Image (cartoon, rainbow, N blue to C red; front, top):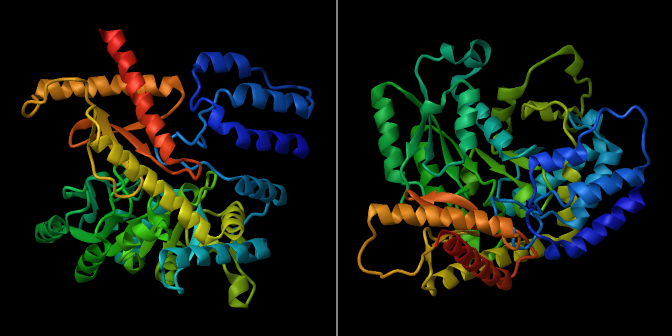
Length: 478
Protein backbone atom coordinates (compact mmCIF):
# COMPACT_ATOMS: atom_id res chain seq x y z
CA UNK A 1 0.00 0.00 0.00
CA UNK A 2 2.80 2.37 0.92
CA UNK A 3 4.66 1.79 -2.34
CA UNK A 4 1.54 2.48 -4.40
CA UNK A 5 0.81 5.63 -2.44
CA UNK A 6 4.38 6.94 -2.63
CA UNK A 7 4.43 6.42 -6.40
CA UNK A 8 1.37 8.68 -6.61
CA UNK A 9 2.93 11.29 -4.27
CA UNK A 10 6.09 11.47 -6.38
CA UNK A 11 4.08 11.86 -9.58
CA UNK A 12 1.86 14.53 -7.96
CA UNK A 13 4.80 16.65 -6.82
CA UNK A 14 6.26 16.42 -10.31
CA UNK A 15 3.06 17.43 -12.09
CA UNK A 16 1.47 20.02 -9.79
CA UNK A 17 2.47 23.02 -11.93
CA UNK A 18 0.63 21.51 -14.90
CA UNK A 19 -2.67 20.95 -13.07
CA UNK A 20 -5.55 23.42 -12.95
CA UNK A 21 -5.37 25.23 -9.62
CA UNK A 22 -9.05 24.69 -8.77
CA UNK A 23 -11.65 22.22 -10.04
CA UNK A 24 -14.78 23.05 -11.98
CA UNK A 25 -17.23 20.80 -10.20
CA UNK A 26 -20.25 20.89 -7.90
CA UNK A 27 -21.30 19.34 -4.62
CA UNK A 28 -23.97 17.32 -6.44
CA UNK A 29 -21.46 15.94 -8.95
CA UNK A 30 -19.01 14.91 -6.24
CA UNK A 31 -21.76 13.42 -4.10
CA UNK A 32 -22.86 11.26 -7.03
CA UNK A 33 -19.30 9.95 -7.40
CA UNK A 34 -18.61 9.33 -3.70
CA UNK A 35 -21.82 8.66 -1.79
CA UNK A 36 -22.72 5.05 -0.99
CA UNK A 37 -24.14 3.06 1.94
CA UNK A 38 -21.75 1.86 4.64
CA UNK A 39 -19.79 -1.01 3.00
CA UNK A 40 -20.49 -4.38 4.60
CA UNK A 41 -17.43 -5.97 2.98
CA UNK A 42 -14.00 -4.51 2.35
CA UNK A 43 -12.33 -3.69 -0.94
CA UNK A 44 -8.78 -3.90 -2.18
CA UNK A 45 -6.55 -0.89 -1.44
CA UNK A 46 -5.83 -0.39 -5.14
CA UNK A 47 -9.52 0.33 -5.68
CA UNK A 48 -9.52 2.88 -2.85
CA UNK A 49 -6.43 4.55 -4.29
CA UNK A 50 -8.21 4.73 -7.66
CA UNK A 51 -11.08 6.65 -6.04
CA UNK A 52 -8.58 8.98 -4.43
CA UNK A 53 -6.66 9.52 -7.66
CA UNK A 54 -9.65 9.73 -10.03
CA UNK A 55 -12.22 11.58 -7.88
CA UNK A 56 -10.65 13.24 -4.83
CA UNK A 57 -7.58 14.70 -6.55
CA UNK A 58 -9.38 16.18 -9.61
CA UNK A 59 -12.07 17.50 -7.26
CA UNK A 60 -9.58 19.31 -5.03
CA UNK A 61 -8.03 22.77 -5.06
CA UNK A 62 -4.26 22.36 -5.39
CA UNK A 63 -2.77 24.60 -2.72
CA UNK A 64 0.74 23.59 -3.74
CA UNK A 65 0.38 25.05 -7.24
CA UNK A 66 2.86 27.91 -7.74
CA UNK A 67 0.05 30.28 -8.74
CA UNK A 68 -2.29 29.46 -5.90
CA UNK A 69 -2.29 32.84 -4.18
CA UNK A 70 -5.56 32.46 -2.28
CA UNK A 71 -5.67 33.02 1.46
CA UNK A 72 -2.47 32.15 3.40
CA UNK A 73 -1.84 28.55 2.44
CA UNK A 74 1.45 26.68 2.18
CA UNK A 75 2.24 24.04 -0.43
CA UNK A 76 3.68 21.37 1.87
CA UNK A 77 6.93 19.58 1.08
CA UNK A 78 7.80 16.02 0.18
CA UNK A 79 9.82 15.46 3.35
CA UNK A 80 6.94 16.74 5.50
CA UNK A 81 4.54 14.36 3.75
CA UNK A 82 6.84 11.50 4.67
CA UNK A 83 7.09 12.82 8.23
CA UNK A 84 3.29 12.87 8.58
CA UNK A 85 3.15 9.30 7.28
CA UNK A 86 5.78 8.15 9.78
CA UNK A 87 4.13 10.03 12.66
CA UNK A 88 0.78 8.42 11.87
CA UNK A 89 2.37 4.98 11.69
CA UNK A 90 4.06 5.44 15.08
CA UNK A 91 0.77 6.93 16.37
CA UNK A 92 2.40 8.59 19.37
CA UNK A 93 0.06 10.54 21.65
CA UNK A 94 1.78 13.47 23.36
CA UNK A 95 -0.13 14.63 26.43
CA UNK A 96 2.99 14.19 28.57
CA UNK A 97 6.58 12.92 28.60
CA UNK A 98 5.57 9.59 30.11
CA UNK A 99 3.20 8.91 27.20
CA UNK A 100 5.78 9.58 24.48
CA UNK A 101 9.31 10.16 25.83
CA UNK A 102 11.28 10.59 22.58
CA UNK A 103 8.51 12.44 20.68
CA UNK A 104 8.15 14.84 23.62
CA UNK A 105 11.87 15.52 23.66
CA UNK A 106 11.79 16.10 19.90
CA UNK A 107 8.95 18.61 20.35
CA UNK A 108 11.13 20.47 22.87
CA UNK A 109 13.97 20.50 20.30
CA UNK A 110 11.70 21.77 17.50
CA UNK A 111 10.20 24.45 19.76
CA UNK A 112 13.75 25.48 20.69
CA UNK A 113 14.61 25.91 17.01
CA UNK A 114 11.51 28.05 16.50
CA UNK A 115 12.39 30.23 19.50
CA UNK A 116 15.83 30.75 18.00
CA UNK A 117 14.37 31.56 14.58
CA UNK A 118 12.09 34.30 15.90
CA UNK A 119 14.50 35.62 18.56
CA UNK A 120 12.75 34.49 21.75
CA UNK A 121 14.29 34.07 25.19
CA UNK A 122 15.67 30.57 25.72
CA UNK A 123 13.62 30.28 28.94
CA UNK A 124 10.35 30.60 27.04
CA UNK A 125 8.23 27.49 26.64
CA UNK A 126 6.01 26.40 23.76
CA UNK A 127 3.92 23.65 22.24
CA UNK A 128 2.39 22.67 18.92
CA UNK A 129 -1.36 23.01 18.39
CA UNK A 130 -3.87 22.53 15.59
CA UNK A 131 -3.38 26.06 14.26
CA UNK A 132 -3.32 29.77 14.91
CA UNK A 133 -6.94 30.07 16.04
CA UNK A 134 -6.37 27.62 18.88
CA UNK A 135 -3.04 29.28 19.72
CA UNK A 136 -4.74 32.68 19.95
CA UNK A 137 -7.48 31.17 22.12
CA UNK A 138 -5.00 29.62 24.55
CA UNK A 139 -2.94 32.82 24.74
CA UNK A 140 -5.99 34.91 25.67
CA UNK A 141 -6.98 32.30 28.27
CA UNK A 142 -3.52 32.62 29.84
CA UNK A 143 -3.74 36.42 29.72
CA UNK A 144 -7.15 36.39 31.39
CA UNK A 145 -5.94 34.08 34.16
CA UNK A 146 -2.88 36.18 34.91
CA UNK A 147 -5.10 39.22 35.28
CA UNK A 148 -8.11 37.68 37.05
CA UNK A 149 -6.63 34.73 38.93
CA UNK A 150 -8.53 31.67 40.13
CA UNK A 151 -11.76 33.54 40.86
CA UNK A 152 -12.77 33.71 37.19
CA UNK A 153 -11.41 30.22 36.50
CA UNK A 154 -13.63 28.88 39.28
CA UNK A 155 -16.74 31.02 39.09
CA UNK A 156 -16.68 32.49 35.58
CA UNK A 157 -16.28 36.04 34.32
CA UNK A 158 -19.20 37.22 36.45
CA UNK A 159 -16.81 36.92 39.41
CA UNK A 160 -14.74 39.76 37.98
CA UNK A 161 -16.09 43.16 39.06
CA UNK A 162 -15.46 45.11 35.83
CA UNK A 163 -15.75 44.40 32.09
CA UNK A 164 -12.48 43.08 30.70
CA UNK A 165 -11.00 44.82 27.66
CA UNK A 166 -8.78 43.49 24.87
CA UNK A 167 -7.20 45.85 22.31
CA UNK A 168 -6.49 44.92 18.70
CA UNK A 169 -6.27 46.74 15.39
CA UNK A 170 -9.04 46.90 12.82
CA UNK A 171 -7.03 44.38 10.80
CA UNK A 172 -6.77 41.67 13.49
CA UNK A 173 -7.70 38.08 12.63
CA UNK A 174 -11.30 37.14 13.43
CA UNK A 175 -10.11 34.35 15.76
CA UNK A 176 -9.36 36.99 18.41
CA UNK A 177 -13.02 38.02 18.62
CA UNK A 178 -14.08 34.39 18.51
CA UNK A 179 -11.74 33.59 21.41
CA UNK A 180 -13.13 36.53 23.39
CA UNK A 181 -16.64 35.19 22.87
CA UNK A 182 -15.72 31.63 23.87
CA UNK A 183 -13.85 32.81 26.96
CA UNK A 184 -16.84 34.80 28.18
CA UNK A 185 -15.08 38.13 27.69
CA UNK A 186 -17.37 39.06 24.83
CA UNK A 187 -16.72 40.17 21.27
CA UNK A 188 -17.92 43.65 22.20
CA UNK A 189 -15.04 43.97 24.67
CA UNK A 190 -12.43 43.67 21.94
CA UNK A 191 -11.71 47.36 21.36
CA UNK A 192 -10.90 48.14 17.75
CA UNK A 193 -7.80 50.33 17.43
CA UNK A 194 -7.33 52.51 14.34
CA UNK A 195 -4.59 51.84 11.81
CA UNK A 196 -2.24 54.12 9.91
CA UNK A 197 -1.83 54.49 6.16
CA UNK A 198 0.14 51.22 6.05
CA UNK A 199 -2.59 49.38 8.01
CA UNK A 200 -0.45 49.10 11.16
CA UNK A 201 -1.87 49.71 14.62
CA UNK A 202 -1.99 53.39 15.58
CA UNK A 203 -0.25 53.40 18.97
CA UNK A 204 -1.60 56.84 19.90
CA UNK A 205 -5.14 55.56 19.36
CA UNK A 206 -4.31 52.48 21.45
CA UNK A 207 -3.32 54.73 24.37
CA UNK A 208 -6.45 56.86 23.93
CA UNK A 209 -8.73 53.83 24.08
CA UNK A 210 -6.98 52.39 27.13
CA UNK A 211 -7.33 55.70 28.95
CA UNK A 212 -10.99 55.99 27.93
CA UNK A 213 -11.75 52.52 29.27
CA UNK A 214 -9.93 53.05 32.52
CA UNK A 215 -11.83 56.30 33.07
CA UNK A 216 -15.10 54.60 32.14
CA UNK A 217 -14.74 51.77 34.64
CA UNK A 218 -13.62 48.97 32.32
CA UNK A 219 -10.55 46.81 32.98
CA UNK A 220 -7.86 46.71 30.25
CA UNK A 221 -5.82 43.49 30.45
CA UNK A 222 -4.49 42.50 27.01
CA UNK A 223 -3.29 43.99 23.73
CA UNK A 224 -3.02 41.85 20.60
CA UNK A 225 -0.48 42.95 17.99
CA UNK A 226 -0.31 41.48 14.50
CA UNK A 227 2.97 40.44 12.90
CA UNK A 228 1.56 40.05 9.42
CA UNK A 229 -2.16 40.78 9.14
CA UNK A 230 -4.22 38.41 7.05
CA UNK A 231 -5.65 41.23 4.95
CA UNK A 232 -2.58 43.17 3.83
CA UNK A 233 0.39 41.58 5.60
CA UNK A 234 0.99 44.63 7.80
CA UNK A 235 3.29 44.26 10.82
CA UNK A 236 2.28 46.38 13.80
CA UNK A 237 4.96 48.51 15.56
CA UNK A 238 5.83 45.81 18.09
CA UNK A 239 8.39 47.72 20.16
CA UNK A 240 6.06 50.68 20.66
CA UNK A 241 3.16 48.40 21.57
CA UNK A 242 5.36 46.54 24.06
CA UNK A 243 6.17 49.87 25.73
CA UNK A 244 2.47 50.67 26.08
CA UNK A 245 1.73 47.18 27.40
CA UNK A 246 4.36 47.56 30.11
CA UNK A 247 3.12 51.04 31.05
CA UNK A 248 -0.43 49.80 31.65
CA UNK A 249 0.37 46.27 32.89
CA UNK A 250 -1.23 44.57 29.87
CA UNK A 251 -0.45 41.10 28.56
CA UNK A 252 1.01 41.53 25.08
CA UNK A 253 0.07 38.78 22.65
CA UNK A 254 1.38 38.75 19.08
CA UNK A 255 -0.51 36.97 16.33
CA UNK A 256 2.45 36.07 14.12
CA UNK A 257 0.71 33.12 12.48
CA UNK A 258 1.27 34.38 8.95
CA UNK A 259 4.31 36.60 9.25
CA UNK A 260 6.44 35.41 12.15
CA UNK A 261 8.76 33.10 10.24
CA UNK A 262 9.54 35.91 7.76
CA UNK A 263 12.09 36.93 10.37
CA UNK A 264 14.28 34.27 8.74
CA UNK A 265 14.44 36.50 5.64
CA UNK A 266 17.11 39.15 6.04
CA UNK A 267 15.15 41.93 4.31
CA UNK A 268 12.16 41.52 6.66
CA UNK A 269 13.98 40.99 9.96
CA UNK A 270 13.80 44.62 11.21
CA UNK A 271 10.00 44.47 11.06
CA UNK A 272 10.02 42.00 13.94
CA UNK A 273 12.00 44.06 16.44
CA UNK A 274 10.13 43.85 19.73
CA UNK A 275 8.63 40.43 19.05
CA UNK A 276 10.66 38.88 21.88
CA UNK A 277 9.04 41.27 24.38
CA UNK A 278 5.62 39.67 23.91
CA UNK A 279 4.11 37.56 26.69
CA UNK A 280 2.82 35.09 24.08
CA UNK A 281 3.30 34.53 20.36
CA UNK A 282 1.07 32.50 18.04
CA UNK A 283 2.70 31.01 14.94
CA UNK A 284 1.70 28.70 12.12
CA UNK A 285 4.52 26.42 10.95
CA UNK A 286 1.99 25.15 8.41
CA UNK A 287 2.32 28.51 6.69
CA UNK A 288 5.87 29.81 6.17
CA UNK A 289 7.70 26.66 7.17
CA UNK A 290 5.97 25.12 4.14
CA UNK A 291 4.34 22.32 6.14
CA UNK A 292 1.09 20.53 5.37
CA UNK A 293 -1.75 21.35 7.75
CA UNK A 294 -2.20 21.11 10.56
CA UNK A 295 0.52 22.61 12.74
CA UNK A 296 0.16 25.73 14.86
CA UNK A 297 2.49 26.83 17.65
CA UNK A 298 2.24 28.91 20.82
CA UNK A 299 5.19 30.39 22.71
CA UNK A 300 4.93 31.75 26.28
CA UNK A 301 7.63 34.04 27.62
CA UNK A 302 6.79 33.11 31.24
CA UNK A 303 6.08 29.36 31.61
CA UNK A 304 4.53 29.75 35.06
CA UNK A 305 1.95 32.26 33.86
CA UNK A 306 0.72 29.68 31.37
CA UNK A 307 0.78 26.78 33.83
CA UNK A 308 -1.42 28.66 36.24
CA UNK A 309 -4.10 29.01 33.55
CA UNK A 310 -4.25 25.40 32.42
CA UNK A 311 -3.16 23.14 35.31
CA UNK A 312 -6.04 21.05 36.63
CA UNK A 313 -5.63 17.93 38.72
CA UNK A 314 -7.44 14.65 38.17
CA UNK A 315 -6.52 11.21 39.45
CA UNK A 316 -5.91 9.87 35.95
CA UNK A 317 -3.49 12.73 35.21
CA UNK A 318 -1.45 12.39 38.40
CA UNK A 319 2.25 12.43 37.54
CA UNK A 320 4.41 10.07 39.60
CA UNK A 321 7.78 10.84 38.00
CA UNK A 322 10.04 12.97 40.18
CA UNK A 323 12.67 14.06 37.63
CA UNK A 324 11.34 17.44 36.34
CA UNK A 325 11.89 16.75 32.64
CA UNK A 326 10.13 13.40 32.91
CA UNK A 327 7.22 14.94 34.86
CA UNK A 328 6.55 17.41 32.02
CA UNK A 329 2.97 17.62 30.76
CA UNK A 330 1.76 19.52 27.70
CA UNK A 331 -1.76 19.81 29.15
CA UNK A 332 -0.36 22.37 31.60
CA UNK A 333 0.15 24.82 28.71
CA UNK A 334 -2.95 24.45 26.57
CA UNK A 335 -6.48 23.03 26.36
CA UNK A 336 -5.66 19.79 24.52
CA UNK A 337 -5.12 16.44 26.20
CA UNK A 338 -4.63 14.09 23.25
CA UNK A 339 -2.05 15.55 20.86
CA UNK A 340 -0.63 14.13 17.64
CA UNK A 341 3.08 14.01 16.85
CA UNK A 342 3.25 17.30 14.88
CA UNK A 343 6.82 17.97 15.95
CA UNK A 344 8.22 15.31 13.61
CA UNK A 345 7.41 17.23 10.43
CA UNK A 346 8.68 20.52 11.90
CA UNK A 347 11.94 18.90 12.96
CA UNK A 348 12.30 16.96 9.71
CA UNK A 349 11.78 19.99 7.44
CA UNK A 350 14.20 22.21 9.37
CA UNK A 351 16.79 19.46 9.76
CA UNK A 352 16.51 18.42 6.11
CA UNK A 353 16.44 21.88 4.48
CA UNK A 354 18.24 24.00 7.09
CA UNK A 355 17.14 27.42 8.27
CA UNK A 356 19.23 29.18 5.59
CA UNK A 357 17.35 27.49 2.72
CA UNK A 358 14.00 28.20 4.38
CA UNK A 359 14.99 31.85 4.83
CA UNK A 360 16.02 32.07 1.18
CA UNK A 361 12.68 30.59 0.08
CA UNK A 362 10.82 33.16 2.19
CA UNK A 363 13.02 35.92 0.74
CA UNK A 364 12.07 34.73 -2.75
CA UNK A 365 8.37 34.90 -1.81
CA UNK A 366 8.84 38.47 -0.59
CA UNK A 367 10.62 39.35 -3.82
CA UNK A 368 7.79 37.91 -5.93
CA UNK A 369 5.21 40.05 -4.12
CA UNK A 370 7.36 43.17 -4.53
CA UNK A 371 7.78 42.34 -8.22
CA UNK A 372 4.02 42.10 -8.60
CA UNK A 373 3.66 45.51 -6.94
CA UNK A 374 6.20 47.00 -9.36
CA UNK A 375 4.37 45.52 -12.35
CA UNK A 376 1.07 46.92 -11.12
CA UNK A 377 2.54 50.37 -10.49
CA UNK A 378 4.02 50.39 -14.00
CA UNK A 379 0.75 49.35 -15.65
CA UNK A 380 -2.18 51.38 -16.97
CA UNK A 381 -4.83 48.77 -16.15
CA UNK A 382 -4.10 47.86 -12.52
CA UNK A 383 -3.98 49.74 -9.23
CA UNK A 384 -2.41 48.77 -5.88
CA UNK A 385 -4.81 49.20 -2.97
CA UNK A 386 -2.35 48.62 -0.12
CA UNK A 387 1.42 48.65 0.37
CA UNK A 388 3.27 45.32 0.10
CA UNK A 389 4.95 44.76 3.46
CA UNK A 390 5.54 40.98 3.38
CA UNK A 391 4.13 38.75 0.62
CA UNK A 392 0.44 39.76 0.52
CA UNK A 393 -0.64 42.04 -2.30
CA UNK A 394 -4.00 43.75 -2.88
CA UNK A 395 -4.84 45.34 -6.20
CA UNK A 396 -7.66 45.75 -8.69
CA UNK A 397 -8.24 45.89 -12.40
CA UNK A 398 -9.11 49.27 -13.96
CA UNK A 399 -11.14 49.13 -17.18
CA UNK A 400 -10.05 51.60 -19.87
CA UNK A 401 -11.56 55.00 -19.07
CA UNK A 402 -10.57 58.66 -19.00
CA UNK A 403 -8.49 59.43 -15.89
CA UNK A 404 -9.88 62.85 -15.00
CA UNK A 405 -10.21 63.59 -11.31
CA UNK A 406 -11.47 61.41 -8.50
CA UNK A 407 -14.06 58.71 -9.20
CA UNK A 408 -17.62 59.10 -8.05
CA UNK A 409 -19.28 56.73 -5.59
CA UNK A 410 -21.18 55.12 -8.45
CA UNK A 411 -17.97 54.59 -10.44
CA UNK A 412 -16.26 53.02 -7.42
CA UNK A 413 -19.19 50.66 -6.88
CA UNK A 414 -19.06 49.63 -10.53
CA UNK A 415 -15.32 48.93 -10.20
CA UNK A 416 -16.10 46.71 -7.21
CA UNK A 417 -18.66 44.73 -9.25
CA UNK A 418 -16.29 44.36 -12.21
CA UNK A 419 -13.48 43.06 -10.03
CA UNK A 420 -15.82 40.63 -8.27
CA UNK A 421 -16.74 39.14 -11.63
CA UNK A 422 -13.08 39.06 -12.67
CA UNK A 423 -12.22 37.09 -9.50
CA UNK A 424 -14.86 34.45 -10.21
CA UNK A 425 -13.76 34.14 -13.84
CA UNK A 426 -10.09 33.87 -12.82
CA UNK A 427 -10.78 31.13 -10.27
CA UNK A 428 -12.83 29.13 -12.75
CA UNK A 429 -10.17 29.36 -15.48
CA UNK A 430 -7.73 27.36 -13.35
CA UNK A 431 -4.39 28.95 -14.27
CA UNK A 432 -4.11 31.31 -11.27
CA UNK A 433 -6.09 31.69 -8.07
CA UNK A 434 -6.66 34.82 -5.97
CA UNK A 435 -8.92 35.55 -3.01
CA UNK A 436 -10.46 38.89 -2.10
CA UNK A 437 -10.29 41.58 0.57
CA UNK A 438 -11.93 44.90 1.36
CA UNK A 439 -9.41 47.75 1.45
CA UNK A 440 -10.70 51.14 2.60
CA UNK A 441 -14.18 50.05 1.58
CA UNK A 442 -13.13 48.89 -1.89
CA UNK A 443 -13.18 45.34 -3.32
CA UNK A 444 -9.62 44.08 -3.86
CA UNK A 445 -8.08 41.14 -5.66
CA UNK A 446 -5.87 39.72 -2.93
CA UNK A 447 -2.98 37.29 -3.19
CA UNK A 448 -0.35 35.83 -0.91
CA UNK A 449 2.94 34.31 -2.11
CA UNK A 450 3.71 31.39 0.21
CA UNK A 451 5.19 28.77 -2.08
CA UNK A 452 8.83 27.88 -2.70
CA UNK A 453 7.88 26.93 -6.29
CA UNK A 454 6.64 30.43 -7.19
CA UNK A 455 8.85 32.60 -9.41
CA UNK A 456 8.74 36.13 -10.82
CA UNK A 457 7.45 34.59 -14.07
CA UNK A 458 4.39 33.34 -12.19
CA UNK A 459 3.60 36.89 -11.09
CA UNK A 460 3.66 38.01 -14.72
CA UNK A 461 1.46 35.09 -15.74
CA UNK A 462 -0.97 36.03 -12.97
CA UNK A 463 -1.47 39.54 -14.36
CA UNK A 464 -1.96 38.14 -17.85
CA UNK A 465 -4.56 35.73 -16.44
CA UNK A 466 -6.37 38.62 -14.74
CA UNK A 467 -6.36 40.55 -18.02
CA UNK A 468 -7.88 37.53 -19.82
CA UNK A 469 -10.53 37.24 -17.11
CA UNK A 470 -11.28 40.96 -17.51
CA UNK A 471 -11.70 40.50 -21.28
CA UNK A 472 -14.07 37.59 -20.65
CA UNK A 473 -16.11 39.65 -18.18
CA UNK A 474 -16.17 42.59 -20.57
CA UNK A 475 -17.33 40.37 -23.42
CA UNK A 476 -20.04 38.77 -21.30
CA UNK A 477 -21.41 42.13 -20.15
CA UNK A 478 -20.86 44.00 -23.41
